[in-house]
Image 1: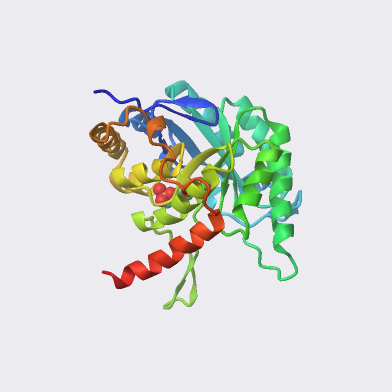
Image 2: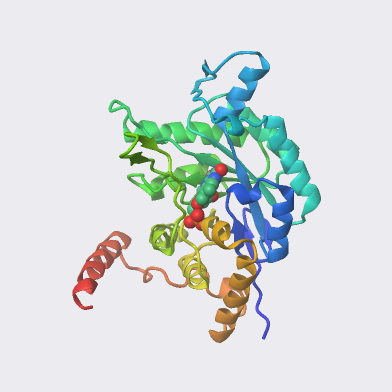
Length: 329
Ligand SMILES: Cc1cc2nc3c(=O)[nH]c(=O)nc-3n(C[C@H](O)[C@H](O)[C@H](O)COP(=O)(O)O)c2cc1C
């Protein structure tokens, strides 16, 4: 029996649910071609950071780093100050090289001029835009509601700029993620990417300095998107992409069972190379056949809360069951 792996994400018909997350693998069109050949259903390009847009504008008018357009411009490492034109060219090149959808990624934290770049990404041919809002509040006078308001303002400004589908990549730390998701849907967001990894810097005890070390994820990071996708699946009609901790076929199956439309992967592909996608797709098809699932639709979201159960009480009961389960081992 052949299985149907197709899925729909942000209104885009995809050949399977495995997409490449924003990471260095999507910096070059040659690499994106390899990912497509290995089976990737779509590729999210590496991010263009608000700081890059602002530094580029500043360098073009011959200034150093300073404050513009409401965005505080931090100095970037020299090899990261690529021209924003290069980013647009890379979208065009990727579009010429592959037939899978190319999702551009714009990354910022505050309303500013960088948002105007969204429409240039659309004009360059991006099939959709992933907006990564990475904001860590450090001011004790800023309330949670103000932080969320900042998100809505950024998203509304980007939504105004483009007609292509818009998905928002979020961190997991909100008081009420379902409410945030509902508000984002009202603003016109087509999907959510759960979750952005908050890459906490380390401290080097030899140099006594901050050490920005990026560690790749493991399957242990999966539980966070798993829980929230299961909760949100029943509550929003937006597309849901799972991001963080998907490494194995079992991880992919779990996320779809929870309700994910696609699984977005970076770490495991950086570790093992694009061909890992081929293995995952073969194993996913075999797993589906063994369970007589003819299509992704047959099992998407089937492991969710019991119908009619009080969701909050259900979460609490699961929390207690999880703690008790340790004693039984
Ligand atoms: C080396 C590296 C670079 C990344 N660069 C970006 C980026 O430019 N923009 C972005 O939104 N996410 C970026 N991410 C985050 C990934 O897109 C992804 O959300 C995260 O790594 C979780 O997925 P994983 O567990 O499969 O790695 C990066 C991750 C890694 C490991």
